[in-house]
Amino acid sequence: MLTRIDHIGIACHDLEATVAFYQETYGFGDAHYETNQEQGVREAMLRINTTGDGAASYLQLLTPIRDDSPVAKWLAKNGEGVHHIAFGTDGDVQDEADGIASKGVRVLYDAPRNGSMGSRITFLHPKDCHGVLTELVQKAGTAPQDG
Ligand code: CMX
Ligand code: CO
Image (cartoon, rainbow, N blue to C red; front, side):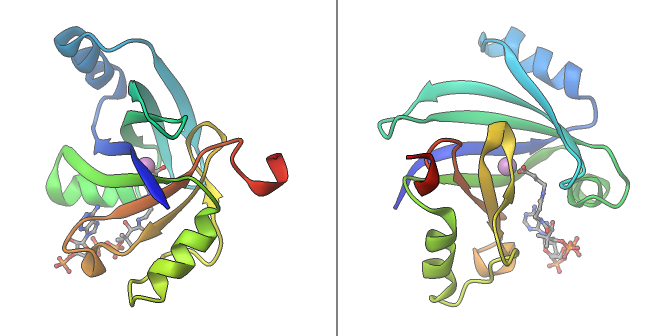
């Protein structure tokens, strides 16, 4: 089941300045910084609230580290702004993706890839989701093999 808004992904040019904006304007706390080579981004996760499924909701601020990354392409076309939304699963993310694919929505990856903070992620094509790039997230520690 999809049980939370895991995060909202926001593309930006200057990661530190954008983090500072969210902290100084809204009072959000420390950011978790990470580079995801495969996705071609450096990112900062700002936790907004915990959720009823034992996880949390975040803002994911993203800046590209390569010109050919999806976020670089999107920024060049659209400028800064909301890039994607991410729903969190309470179980196996591939099972969720398979269920959604069976309804005719294109899943972008054959198998889940690495996301923020040890999570496993996949994406749904925005053209099949009314214009919204949609990510599915299984947080670290919820894989069946992790108990
Ligand atoms: N939201 C909504 N629509 C989007 C979009 C987005 N983020 N990105 C692209 N599109 C639309 C474009 O506007 C375009 O529409 P039109 O044909 O009507 O102009 C269409 O999709 C094709 O766009 P494109 O610029 O040619 O881009 P690509 O097809 O090369 O790539 C996508 C699009 C979704 C397949 C690619 O961005 C992707 O693989 N995304 C998943 C990975 C990702 O985004 N990683 C970064 C985040 C990492 C993380 O969250 O951890
Ligand atoms: Co994301």
